[in-house]
Image 1 (cartoon, rainbow, N blue to C red):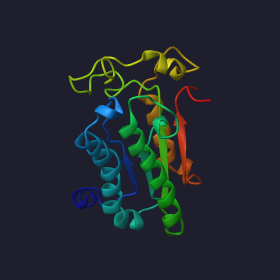
Image 2: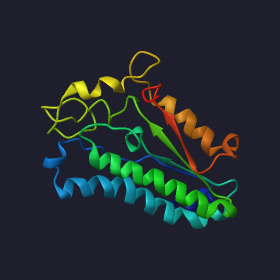
Image 3: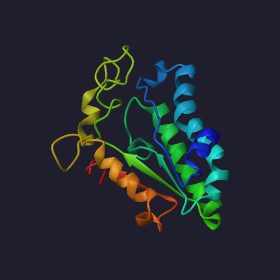
Image 4: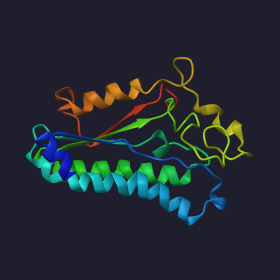
Length: 188
């Protein structure tokens, strides 16, 4: 973070978009697997924010946009560790918004769902699973209610990028302590 701040001459916006998804039956999830998801998704987000806060306090109209997920609020089977990590990101976002509001840093999160990415199309998953990282014996009927209401299937990442850009910009200057769900109406 220090090297980035030095190279950029300051910091006004931080977007925490790194994350991993490991899907499995919960009774078959090892503690190491669970902790890996929490470590990357929740602890990684915390560490980036902690290290960025001094520069953000010096910035102009500073904003942090964290990636949560629709999994934080809605049941997505085989994803307990992921849901816990993203629920933590969402709760932390609310706490930080309250803590730093008077100091001029806005905190928001986006909740992507039904978005095509390496995480959802399986290209970013381990070889131990089928499809988008699901167990080989996954009950696909559990996913029937998770289809987008608008459009034809999953949306591209640009659907999320535009919202992130708005939240990080002056257009989002009156938005803090909340999340924006981007899922094509999958979760009404």
